[in-house]
Length: 128
Image (tube, rainbow, N blue to C red; front, side):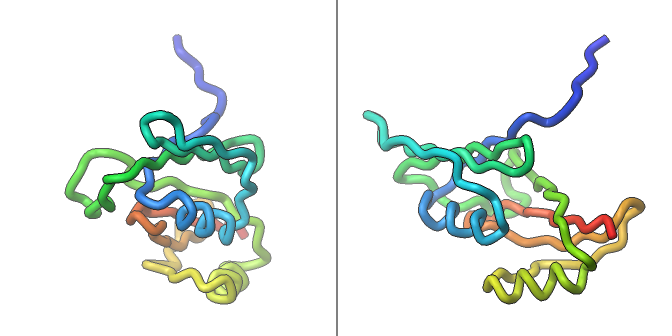
């Protein structure tokens, strides 16, 4: 029987690497490394969150995702260290990030949703 133990990383394709990196760094992710562009014009970056990573790729000519119109990443969730959901909301506003929906009570915490610059939904969960 297969027994996965953790999610190692998520890979995202974005239209503008610099804009995406600013967004994710505002959320508190750490830029670990970048490379490119390679011979095909592809740039890549690795962002760290805890022991996991988000790999980000971009190349010219990509268009933004139209939410719900394509198969792909629906959303991913980051567990946030915040004293309360209200504190998390205040920190997001102070960083200039817009909350798309929420807060939403979950069985194991409360969630807020943002959209990254390309429309990928990012769930932020506070377990307090």
